[in-house]
Amino acid sequence: MASSPISSNTSTTISSELQAQTKLALAGQLTDGAYKSVSLPIYQTAIFRFDDTDGKPAYDYSRSGNPTRAALESTIADLEGGAGAVCVASGMAAVATVLALYDVDAHIICSHDCYGGTERLLTWYKKQGKLDVSYVDLTDPLNLALALRPETKAVWVETPSNPLLRIIDLQKVGEIAKDAGIDVIVDNTFLSPLLQRPIDFGADFVVHSTTKYLNGHSDVIGGVVVAKTKENRERAHFAANATGATSAPFDSWLVLRGLKTLPLRLRQHEENAQTVARYLESHSGVKKVFYPGLESHEGHELAKKQQKGFGGMVSFEVIGDAAAVRALLTSTKVFTLAESLGGVESLIEQPATMSHASMRPEAREEAGITRNVIRLSVGIEHIDDLIADLEQALLAASCSTTKRSTKSSATHV
Ligand SMILES: *Cc1c(COP(=O)(O)O)cnc(C)c1O
Image 1 (cartoon, protein in one colour):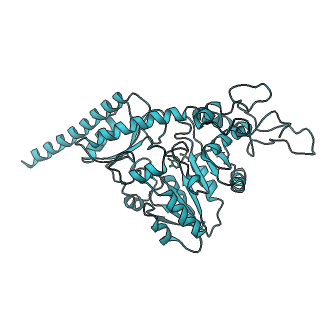
Image 2 (image 1 turned 90 degrees about the vertical axis):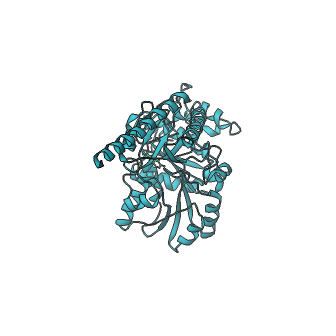
Image 3 (image 1 turned 120 degrees about the vertical axis):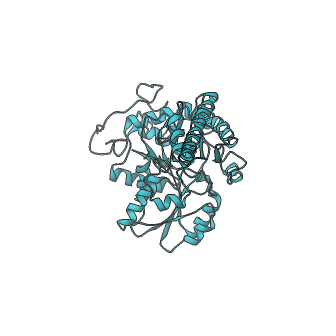
């Protein structure tokens, strides 16, 4: 590609010796050989001109390849330590792209509290006779060994899990999978490659919803598949190109711009989340807090071992009836009641009725997602405002419980 004014691979031009934070600040800068723009150009084009019919140009059609998308792909692949990546239209498109690589009679083992949309897709495929799936509690990696069948082709891992932030031992799962000759696929959306690199533990594929931390501004739906080997990157690219799942130039550009501040954002997300988790743990209206950064968390030691940080997601079980939970969810003023996560703004939600509503009720119950479980995506606002907001919302919840119980005891009298 020496003749092309566009380098599709920034890592050949930006030294691989640099720290991730530096590489991200520089990402995309060396892509435009024509005018040397410092900001990555958005190649908002569907097609590219051929010089003749003798050879194929570097890019011919944007579903198959686009320089803006290519710059993002090489940046994310480098961060994850993979051989390559393919950026697609959503996190679910990334999930579907990887699953498309397996034969219809393949058996997949999946962590039992995976993302609701992943569970919905796998359940739908199974109903169509396209893939068989077993849901297993992978916090005990032995359950993986027990669920193996001759036709098992892959294990699907999400750690920390959603919404209870259980931690799965990537090293152990990787060893069992390697012995069994099956692929390891890790959904790394909750942490990002700066806090966890599954390929270092033997993962074959890493997927992300770039909608979340990688873009970080709640203004793009996007996804990525990162492959450990070049061959698997080509297979994933084939699938994404064949189904038309690849992402648009402008969306790719926005995600790359978001990535530039990922290290800074993550630091603030985590610092705030740690303080919020400690605050909730000491609150009398809260039964249990789920945050891997707390010493009380079951997976704390394991998280310390395999992660470079604990991330910005905090879940907790609030005490009270349905009205109290509703009062909590509708009283926050800084936290927005919304699904999703990983944006600069703080979000609050009820997984049972919102993010995990698409999950089968039995699956939800098995995973321990009750209506009193509240999930927070802790943003980068000032911590004092976040704590004050939770304080008044928890007060509203406890008042709602007291009011109702006073009322009902009054009617009994
Ligand atoms: C959001 C999410 C997805 C799906 O991503 P979309 O961009 O919404 O399609 C997959 N996995 C996890 C862990 C997620 O949080």
